[in-house]
Image (cartoon, rainbow, N blue to C red; front, side, top):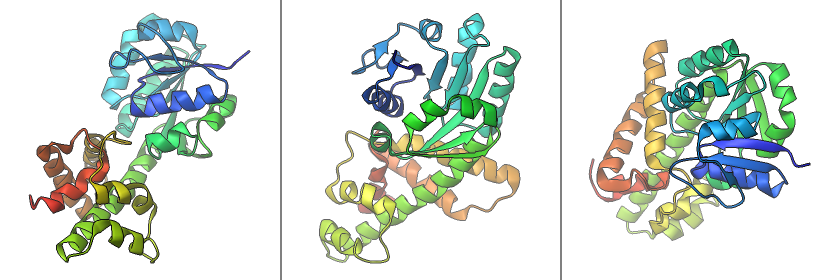
Length: 284
């Protein structure tokens, strides 16, 4: 019998994770009012129906506030047989509070923050940062192993959300630097695609360059692998935690301003590679 899992939120990331599992023979149930049909998934009309069918439930939602609202709406449908595995990049303190609330109902909660685009996730090539107790992680190891090639347990609930923001800070600044550099190359008279090909043969090469350089050079931001507006949300969370802890993040302060300008130019729902357009369009 196929292993069964539910996914609440089957947009870019949730849909990709679902398709990854389906390819490996899992029976996947999905629910998302914005995506009533996803290839390979058995869609449920509401979240309560889904948790009635599945003991293991992935949460792939925009913010931790949305996650909390979904869990609240489930009410008595949440039981001690359920484990919620949350891939949402949210506010760590809110994730910790959600874990405590679910524990009072006897349910289990894990963070499984995804490092990598929806395209990588679809092929099981992303990385998971896991937050939670070791026993719960081990109990769900087969599912976690099916979801991602690399998995790192970084601490209790809350730790994965914090580490995901560290990851996103560095990766986002890599994209911003790449966008500025390619726009600078164009201003100096170089073709962006040719400059990119040359840069890939130098110490300046990076994972961000490999993933986003072609999109930037060609101005191809649809369909998105990861939306720019979602990274802006993450940057706002990074700055919030920095202010709480006294961490200095001057580059991220500038990065937020760049992302806000890109959103104002109409690129919020585009791939996050579109940050280059802030430099191209002279809107600083």
